[in-house]
Image (cartoon, rainbow, N blue to C red; front, top):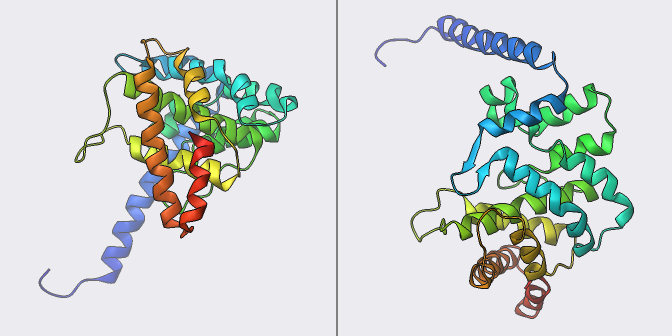
Length: 250
């Protein structure tokens, strides 16, 4: 711009923008807290996941249906299953809240906050946050058993369903972020040192899809995820001998 810039004008302008956003957040938060988190679950039916795969309510119902068996596939103690199922019944419900609709980066964060506000156990609240992890490069990973199972189940459902629906990414196009989803999946497994029969888990998830998933699709997803694992191993500078880890996931 030509001429000098008044720092005072810039400061006041920024303050006005921040004040308006704060007032928006305050308003949406007040609206949300008139309900319990569980009351937002049903509203997921208004959010489309994919035309062949249904709404977000359909998707999360599928996740809820597989978490018990997936817990065992992951080698996690079955004593945690009740907590995992309770968390799965609420997972992603905050996507229907006013504040997450307006401030999408708060997904998971608000689920945890609203769950604690409703008096739910901390392990359930934490799992509702951890299902979203990792959200970006360098982010933290799920650490609790419930969070790991939910995060893995959600990503497997996306991969199986979207590959089955013909949404495989091309060399130049990945509209559903399947590379990011699968890379996050292998990061979670490696970070938490989970031995994992990927084919068995994918077959389990395929059984609850609303479309037919044949073995060719499952094999395609296995190869797709394996390539992401190879990429991860290169990124963390493992030696060639350590590539044997890949067999654990195939």
